[in-house]
Length: 442
Ligand SMILES: Cc1cc2nc3c(=O)[nH]c(=O)nc-3n(C[C@H](O)[C@H](O)[C@H](O)COP(=O)(O)O)c2cc1C
Ligand code: SF4
Ligand code: SF4
Image (tube, protein in one colour):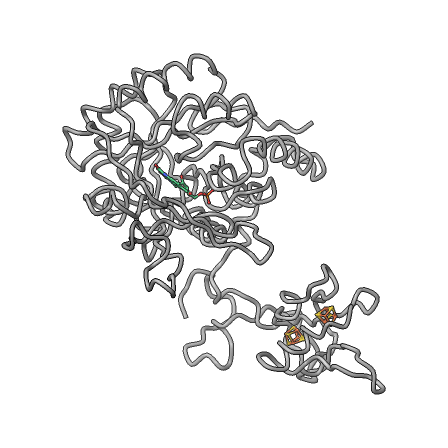
């Protein structure tokens, strides 16, 4: 059986599934139950200075639901831990002693002054924790006080605070990044320049969940007034994967260990983050929606996948898909795909026809011999994948790649075996001769 154990920055855990810093890791009661359920590690709910913060006594959480009431997105306006620092530190010490084989990371957020960091770091180290995570990502409440995302949006601050942590603590330092920024490579580079051992991402995304149109108040609100919250859950996974891949393939940060966060709900989500360069994954929303036991499905699913694919360990999967991510300008414009409808599976709902007719390339016919019948017109199809995306029947529509030499019915030309990117394309006024270096702009 494949080895699920991981070693991340020298921190061992029996599997790569860590609970992210959030309500599931708020106190010993939760973390003990999480470890008993099988979680490999936790990032303890973010600690701050005393006196503790105060949360609203109103809706902290809200959701975006699918029509069948599955949680697609999750929003919160919760602050960092609202319990006294000593209570948290004592519990961290107690839990780490009881579960020495699990990863215990402590998330921290204190004011952006050297004395605050110098003061808290030895207290955390004294608990026996394995590492610290710097919360430079919380986008609500704390950022109004100059912490969280307010630090994470300024690379110079990230670098400076990371340097303090490396100076005043021997623990490995993970810098948790905010997605509320234009280009995530800059904060990641700053973290590395400050000496970070790893980055973790993403924290939550600025969001307003909706408007109550009867009361004319944003939703959710605390007695009629609301504030933007942080968005997470399955809906943010694509954003998180992209940011992870950006860091993994940036020459300035390539090889920097990454802990992947954002919408991980299944072993498959986790495997995707790992394939894009993550050494561990962190989970919050899925645990809040389904409870701690989901880790058992995640472990058995990932283990089965590794076995089936011939990987002996999680480590062998790390970064495998990174070379497949590139910039648009390196894509092969000679490649041709066509949609194919499996008539045996088609239920004749007509959705593919409607969307292709109204918004794509009018490439799906709706009748044959006066009967409802849906068929792709190869002489119009550009392989855009819209019909595949909307068809309600799994695998009913697929894309087929034309082979070199095969005639594309749309252009009447045989598909070339040559790779032709925008850089060399005749329509590009700034085209470069074929064979110029892959990274050169055009
Ligand atoms: C209710 C709630 C509270 C959170 N509190 C923290 C926190 O204290 N510190 C932190 O770094 N991230 C916090 N997060 C962010 C999560 O750790 C995580 O980065 C985010 O939810 C994305 O993961 P997910 O899609 O699995 O939920 C919180 C998230 C939620 C939903
Ligand atoms: S792939 Fe795009 S163009 Fe082709 S049939 Fe489907 S929707 Fe139409
Ligand atoms: S969307 Fe799928 S099931 Fe519906 S008509 Fe098209 S191919 Fe058939």
